[in-house]
Length: 353
Ligand code: FDP
Image: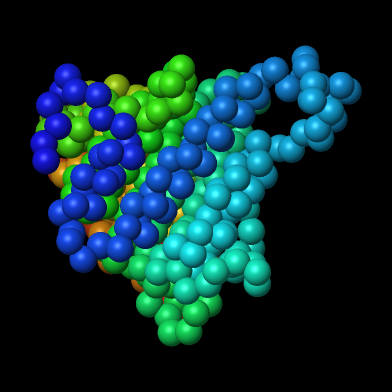
């Protein structure tokens, strides 16, 4: 089914329509995606009230209802876990907030077909200053034997993802998801509490608008990254400069560039060859969505979706956006950063071996 721009489509209906294309589907993934959307609404409700906490709460410890206040990222983590721990759809969960896997509790149904990996509140340094933040989800099919899920289910290459999604809590709350059939964006109507289709079939624009990097770290960059960014800025005279935008909230930076075209980079440095961002719940799902929108993500050496994760919180250098811009980054690194790339490759290999 194709959706015309004027029609009102809820996320529930959209997910169901997508499922209909697969007569063999059991509905488990549909249910899981819907649970994710519901969790997003609950988190959105709290994030929009975050600024009120200090004035409404007594001595910063309790809210008007007398409930103890939780840090928002802990709250988001719990909401997502509790939304999914009892449905029978998920075999194991993993979150940025926990060192280890989060198994399904004993008293809840086991045998779920999917592993859910998530970053409950990304860009959390922006919460206190009222700047947009996000949530990221990655869904893998269970591959381990036995009822209980294991690390094997979580540590799969990105090209094996069944679905990925993110939520931006910004001037509006938006949920963007892909099940491998394009990328679709929904905007939350807070009045009716529904995510409505606002951005069907998102494609990253061919003509890029922005580049995004934390320029404050320039002194730590490799020569290749420095020259690449200079090229993006048009300093070598071969191209028009791209505008610079950096929120410091990965989801928001990624989302803006997905809609406007451009490149986001959080490179590795000689001191930290793998950079800062996490592979399983940041880079992989966003790389999956970028690819579905016609873009590309690289760790500087090659496609992020081909990387085999070796640990849950593994870091990865991340370049994502328009394919030609990301490939140009790879080329700059290949030319100027042979020593750095060799070190990073060795580290990556060591982690895998
Ligand atoms: P944060 O530490 O605020 O949670 O991955 C975490 C992340 O934010 C990303 O969302 C963000 O893009 C990046 O770190 C910002 O890091 P820098 O402050 O080093 O630029």
